[in-house]
Image (tube, rainbow, N blue to C red):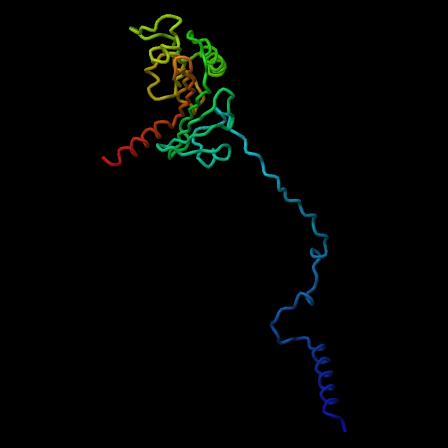
Length: 248
């Protein structure tokens, strides 16, 4: 007599054989990856993978003054230099994206519409009473500006009427007393109100005004101020006024 184990083995063998002969399986389960036919595409060699570059492209400064452009945000400018907020949209720094050796301090105005002006202050210029040191430094900056932007709209070097510091040896004292004027400026022909200005200049499209000015804080010590106003400067001015008048 067959044992129970032998009978069960026979049943299992018969079931496997019948399943292999069945041409109409009742199961709707799709074939597994192991049993599915392999396509020609799958047999084709895999294309070589491209190497992913990990090199970060270096951010380049703008081709505008000191390497900035109108509308830059604090985040964009902060990628080049450290900024310190000083209120009224003012941000101070000791550098610029493209600094100049003569200037040591930079003031940026950044409003809702981005950067609207940049002002550069020179290092201290020591001079004799005739102002020779200041005149030399002024020429060092004004000449390349004229070469780049053309003939200026204004070019002033005079002593105010009634000043007692009108002698050549009193040149620095006149500047210190704010009675002597030494500046040069360009007004864009695209700027608002430029039609009322004599000799407006065809400046780059985003620059409204440029000015270089000499100032003195002692009778023998002076500095230069180079100011660039962009076409959106009025937006910053209006924003500052609005903030200042909030409490009225």
